[in-house]
Length: 173
Image (tube, rainbow, N blue to C red; front, side, top):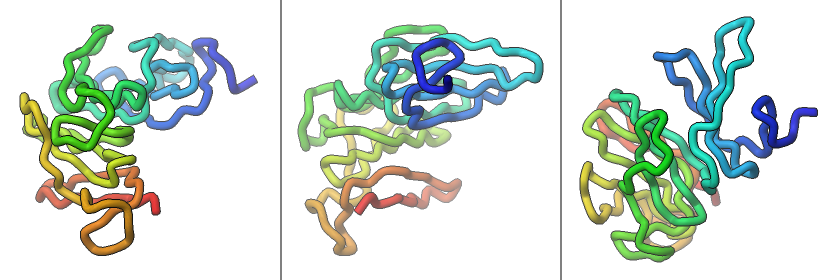
């Protein structure tokens, strides 16, 4: 059985990344409300729960191996040192809303070399950039209501920022 809550099972995995240092997968196991780590080394089935009781959606890791996780239930993004359970609030966390210090269904994430965080703010139809240690974000795409005009997004999901700082958005609508 593939679907389940055992350490060898997942239920609606929604994002994944590779920790190159440990050669393992870090997986957002959405319906089991956890972030798990699975070893990729052949001959091993080593796995562990990194973060439990979280409504995770998006994952990112920076060059210092901090793990960033979006929580769609708390409308926030937290940064974790591997092994840490509580993390540090780095975006949102001021309730569901459309203020510059709020998020509404934060989905996918990207972290650049300066530890700035880009968040796909799905239900606000925008992408936000939170500079390191900032208390509020900057709208870098969308934010003009839901739509298909050049200045609008509709439920954005996947995002990517290249080395030149160009933002790419997978628009949900």
